[in-house]
Image (cartoon, rainbow, N blue to C red; front, side, top):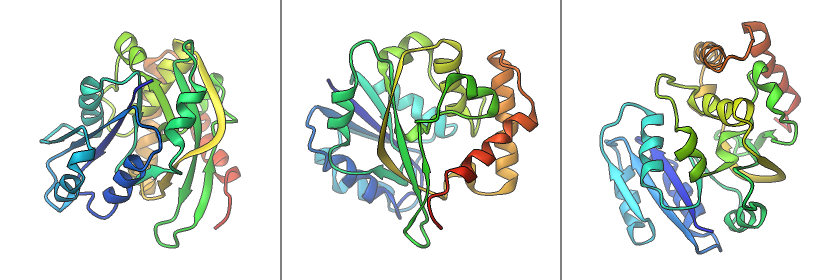
Length: 247
């Protein structure tokens, strides 16, 4: 089973080397690694080129946003399974791809794992974002499994579409809502941490951004004909508090 890992980057010189190393150090050999860069102006591409013999494709060009870049990566991927690994995230250990391969049977379209969120300032785990509690009916509450720890068959993208670029922040929520809650694709949850994620992601960066995410989630739910409202969607913040591991 071939796995395609796609990393989208823009001016990621501080973190991307750690991301790359977490991929190329995997003990699973049947994978390809694709980096889609948005024409970085820092040392990102220089760092990527340092590992060019272990990276299948490095593309650096202007795009219309993070989801446009993800869609480019998906169109180039030749693997059976696709992982989107952000440029400030990294695989939790060197056996992640092997674990994914062992848990994805032919009838499963999505494999859902856990993400541990860490503080860049303290380098400590602050929250565990688990797929264990997920149910497709939770979409109306703004809840989906952690996108970085979700592995999806390329055939699911081909048949059902990729990320909707009308969403600037919540296209991953929209795609998972479509796949899991509307189309009801088959999925499997494993209670394992697959990815470590920085707490500095765009959707967590400020109250203003969180407010915008909430409205994009509502827009997605309306598009997908799932009833909700702002109060229900903001329930997800209570869930985040319940997932606090330590501070």
